[in-house]
Image (cartoon, chains in turn red, orange):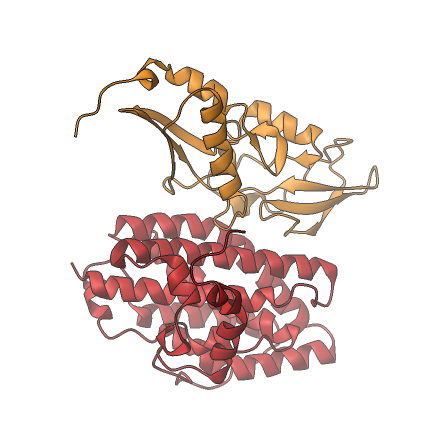
Length: 249
Length: 168
């Protein structure tokens, strides 16, 4: 069984959720209204929870503990997309990113609940029920802001223009991904991208927003990152790195 | 390796369940983790008691507290070797919350989740009854609340904000 390619793939799922969760947590205390402060804290915690489930599976496949993976890797060892590591920007930017990601997870999980790998199937089924709340929340807000005031519309359109090419990186397969597709463990990202694109374009258009005519992802390799990831990791892991032998909280 | 049978073998599994039924949900102290459907299974193997539990929401920060509470409780009734396993499949659903627990949630000011049979989205727009006055003249103010498992509502009838345990 292609265990190594499976582990690499699982790591990408974990890292994407983890870094996005961290970015969302940066809204705590800063969101434009109290309700959204609470909502983004929830979204952040959910994503960290989902990342944790994938990191546990990664540990089963490789023996490497989640704490070690999260706190003691340097930026070039992370396998998240640049899409999730970009700074949180304004609230329209974070909302648009979360929406695009939620829809990606929505189409992906719909397939993963039928994976031939029992553990992948179990985790996907667990996460999927929670994700229903995310997509409902973010798609409502995309519409509200897209069709809202001139300013909210302009900010949403700017966010979309900036994010679209980066979002496409979510659909770039890993080197040995065909092994996983052949074994029906993971779906083909090409098909997934079409489905995602149909759904996003239809909702974004109904929200008065124009999807940029870009077909190429801004980045290809998940080993290459913007300078923002190192900053984030530095911020996130500084305490853990001070006390390498474990802190009792 | 075969281990000698010892005292733990004399424990009736139903007594262990009774003890666990006294371990309260740390975030909703009126209901037990058994009533919430969080404790899934209790097994006696050799000299150990193995408790399987499942998280409600994956990111629930109370998981460790729950795990420790289970261990402490079983230690207190004289079981030394306690192992708590986390299981994911089948995933926890709010449909597992017992009838008795639903009534207790209301006394705590939490509207119980609808029985959804696996289709949460169908119930999104269903009216939610206020746990204080039972009026369904209520509105959701936030689908995300102070914990992952709660949404925030307002009752237009008795002018009381309240929370709902979310359907999952």
